[in-house]
Image (cartoon, rainbow, N blue to C red; front, top):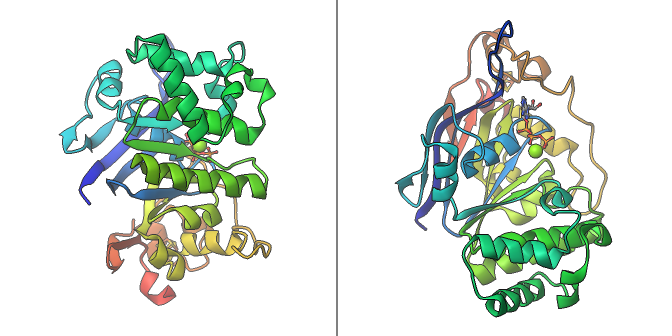
Length: 321
Ligand SMILES: Nc1ncnc2c1ncn2[C@@H]1O[C@H](COP(=O)(O)OP(=O)(O)OP(=O)(O)O)[C@@H](O)[C@H]1O
Ligand code: SF4
Ligand SMILES: [Mg+2]
């Protein structure tokens, strides 16, 4: 399949600009991320809270300006632009917010929110907008009368369905799903995942699927990138990555994830969750890694091939295999 989205050495700094008697405070939340997503693919990004998943998504969307690196969408360079232009050129990418309620106006019935999105995008005819909204509500498994409800009258699962309807009305090619099942109980999670698979097939969508939950990523994604402190430490086909994880961090995440058959999770990851304010020298994972050597503390590991289309950044991945 042709490549739809490519990020090359993408870097994003967050924080405050310098002011009078005030030094700039900036954190590098995404640091040299390279990834390529093919048309029709479901590409997963996993990692602990704070590793930069949402910042990566916002940078790809054009909501956050990249400090360095390049983004191409369907072969066209869309990076290095002012925010409004960046977002305009990336209209084919839409984002489903990590907090589904935050994307809906609490004072508006959801039908009005959906209608507003279409009007902003130039669909002028009210009857056509109403027909499209009814059709999209049905596609996400909701009755047309849900349009009359306010956001607080929806369950978490229903809010997510409305969030999907809102962006699918804009006919995107690539949908970034930020933690689409977080906070939902297992049966609702399963129905949201089924719906995502249906919608992907029906509308020919490509997904960038962000989650800290490996069990969910495993069910949905064709390929997966594992992020640690703003960097991709392992990337590969989902099957290979879950069957033969090469990076100690991926292994630790997998060991800590609940099993697909419902068995409880193993021990959680050792050590403190990472902070961007204190990035360790050498391999960023070394203070928490059970395999760390003196080399790990001194030198950044190179990225090497661990199998077909499977890459890992670890000095000792061969010994761990
Ligand atoms: N506006 C901001 N200014 C400064 N730092 C920020 C800002 N937003 C996020 N950060 C920091 O950037 C890092 C990456 O945050 P981000 O939200 O991208 O992580 P995440 O992987 O999406 O986490 P989560 O799983 O909790 O959603 C974190 O350390 C966070 O504290
Ligand atoms: S490079 Fe060293 S510290 Fe980093 S993950 Fe590999 S073994 Fe662990
Ligand atoms: Mg996030």
